Image 1 (cartoon, rainbow, N blue to C red):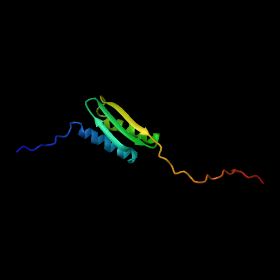
Image 2 (image 1 turned 180 degrees about the vertical axis):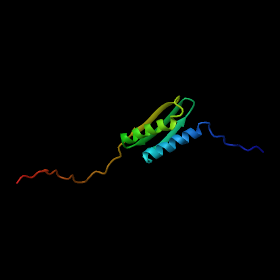
Image 3 (image 1 turned 90 degrees about the horizontal axis):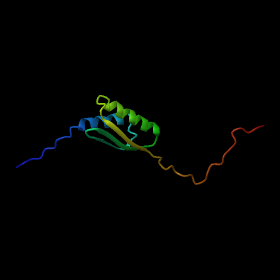
Length: 100
Protein backbone atom coordinates (compact mmCIF):
# COMPACT_ATOMS: atom_id res chain seq x y z
CA UNK A 1 0.00 0.00 0.00
CA UNK A 2 1.31 3.43 -0.97
CA UNK A 3 1.07 6.33 1.41
CA UNK A 4 0.95 9.92 0.25
CA UNK A 5 3.35 12.36 1.81
CA UNK A 6 2.84 16.08 1.78
CA UNK A 7 5.91 17.89 0.54
CA UNK A 8 5.96 21.55 1.59
CA UNK A 9 6.56 24.13 -1.08
CA UNK A 10 10.11 25.42 -1.26
CA UNK A 11 8.69 28.86 -0.57
CA UNK A 12 6.62 27.86 2.49
CA UNK A 13 9.24 29.12 4.96
CA UNK A 14 9.40 32.55 3.29
CA UNK A 15 5.59 32.72 3.11
CA UNK A 16 5.28 31.92 6.83
CA UNK A 17 8.00 34.44 7.70
CA UNK A 18 6.26 37.22 5.72
CA UNK A 19 2.89 36.43 7.35
CA UNK A 20 4.38 36.41 10.87
CA UNK A 21 6.25 39.67 10.25
CA UNK A 22 3.10 41.40 8.96
CA UNK A 23 1.07 40.12 11.92
CA UNK A 24 3.70 41.35 14.39
CA UNK A 25 4.24 44.78 12.82
CA UNK A 26 0.53 45.56 12.30
CA UNK A 27 -0.74 44.06 15.57
CA UNK A 28 -2.97 41.73 13.57
CA UNK A 29 -4.91 44.57 11.93
CA UNK A 30 -4.71 43.20 8.40
CA UNK A 31 -7.83 41.10 7.96
CA UNK A 32 -8.08 38.13 5.59
CA UNK A 33 -4.32 38.22 5.10
CA UNK A 34 -3.15 36.02 2.24
CA UNK A 35 0.48 35.73 1.12
CA UNK A 36 1.60 33.99 -2.06
CA UNK A 37 5.27 33.39 -2.88
CA UNK A 38 6.55 32.00 -6.19
CA UNK A 39 9.77 32.15 -8.22
CA UNK A 40 9.82 35.89 -8.71
CA UNK A 41 7.04 37.48 -6.64
CA UNK A 42 5.72 37.97 -3.15
CA UNK A 43 2.03 38.87 -3.27
CA UNK A 44 0.17 40.14 -0.22
CA UNK A 45 -3.62 40.51 -0.13
CA UNK A 46 -5.84 41.72 2.69
CA UNK A 47 -8.00 44.45 4.17
CA UNK A 48 -7.38 47.08 6.84
CA UNK A 49 -9.07 50.21 8.16
CA UNK A 50 -6.22 52.74 7.87
CA UNK A 51 -3.50 53.80 5.48
CA UNK A 52 -1.02 53.72 8.37
CA UNK A 53 -1.55 49.97 8.78
CA UNK A 54 -1.16 49.54 5.01
CA UNK A 55 2.15 51.42 5.22
CA UNK A 56 3.28 49.19 8.10
CA UNK A 57 2.35 46.16 5.98
CA UNK A 58 4.57 47.35 3.13
CA UNK A 59 7.45 47.98 5.53
CA UNK A 60 6.99 44.54 7.10
CA UNK A 61 7.12 42.83 3.69
CA UNK A 62 10.27 44.74 2.74
CA UNK A 63 11.86 43.76 6.06
CA UNK A 64 10.91 40.10 5.70
CA UNK A 65 12.14 39.79 2.12
CA UNK A 66 15.24 42.00 2.50
CA UNK A 67 17.82 39.17 2.30
CA UNK A 68 16.47 38.25 -1.17
CA UNK A 69 16.07 41.54 -3.06
CA UNK A 70 15.37 39.84 -6.40
CA UNK A 71 11.66 39.36 -5.57
CA UNK A 72 9.00 41.61 -7.01
CA UNK A 73 6.62 42.69 -4.24
CA UNK A 74 2.91 43.21 -4.91
CA UNK A 75 0.94 44.56 -1.95
CA UNK A 76 -2.81 44.55 -2.52
CA UNK A 77 -4.15 45.67 0.84
CA UNK A 78 -7.43 47.56 0.54
CA UNK A 79 -8.31 50.27 3.05
CA UNK A 80 -12.00 49.98 3.92
CA UNK A 81 -14.23 51.82 6.35
CA UNK A 82 -16.57 49.81 8.48
CA UNK A 83 -20.09 51.18 8.80
CA UNK A 84 -20.57 53.07 12.02
CA UNK A 85 -23.92 52.98 13.80
CA UNK A 86 -26.18 55.84 12.79
CA UNK A 87 -27.70 57.90 15.59
CA UNK A 88 -31.46 58.08 15.64
CA UNK A 89 -31.41 61.78 16.55
CA UNK A 90 -28.46 63.98 15.58
CA UNK A 91 -26.82 65.94 18.36
CA UNK A 92 -27.40 69.69 17.86
CA UNK A 93 -24.28 71.78 17.29
CA UNK A 94 -23.32 74.27 20.02
CA UNK A 95 -21.14 77.30 19.81
CA UNK A 96 -17.79 76.75 21.45
CA UNK A 97 -17.63 80.31 22.81
CA UNK A 98 -20.71 81.77 24.33
CA UNK A 99 -20.05 85.45 24.97
CA UNK A 100 -21.15 87.20 28.13
